[in-house]
Length: 358
Image 1 (tube, rainbow, N blue to C red):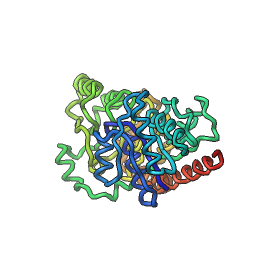
Image 2 (cartoon, rainbow, N blue to C red; image 1 turned 180 degrees about the vertical axis):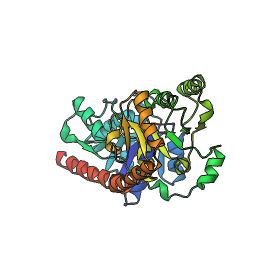
Image 3 (tube, rainbow, N blue to C red; image 1 turned 30 degrees about the vertical axis):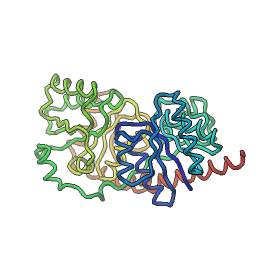
């Protein structure tokens, strides 16, 4: 099977990491994978570094006729079996191009707030049940929607810097380390984490925040840390390609999102055996079993989040117990192979539906 993947992106994020890992998993099962999109950015660079075939197509806005024509020609030239669009812009161009080229297409919805442009998809993949419910509420037919949960490689098996050396590099003492790996944006809730931790200054902890610091919101969070008087207990480490090293020196993961489909970070941390404290929103409850692999708090509630964090700070045995349960849950539900097999099943279904329609 030959598949062309369409995603417009210049930065590193969950959808971009998902596509890279999906293409790696599918290639391992014999699928010929071609990427169409901007090559100047994290995803394009990573795909080329991993020797995937890539076609530069800019997809400027939603009315780029030249890009659409280029994609149609690519599909026809390569005799692709299927086109797979990601995020709204990718779904939009993949849907139109596949229609003109006469091939089926699959679109993946990565969030619970993007409901446009999936209508031309032969099948729609939702990355969580929460996203699937949102798509149904937008009027998409349930019979077209398939939930395929994110799956991630076993980050714990990757080579990494020894824990003590990594802690020394980040200027961490022996206090429990809380990690948060996310883009600095309002939806991810870094400010909520800070307001929660400001209520726990009587306990020992250090927070490591991973994410590019070139956004306005990142500057606001840094200013908030100063205003709350906790900046000396926070490490703003910027974007890191070695997040496995961050997980390896952490004691728990925080994910206080205001909105979330299904964060890859939750699954990566679970693979590492880290307990998780997160907000109970979107698809987070599908990744974190409350009271078993972590603790969930109501969204946008710093006091409740602080209470959950304190519970784990005060009980190292509970942290270990929940982390081990999270690892088992990762192995059963969220390994990369599970996502790859689930996606392949949707592809086969879409191709068969395309045959019946022709």
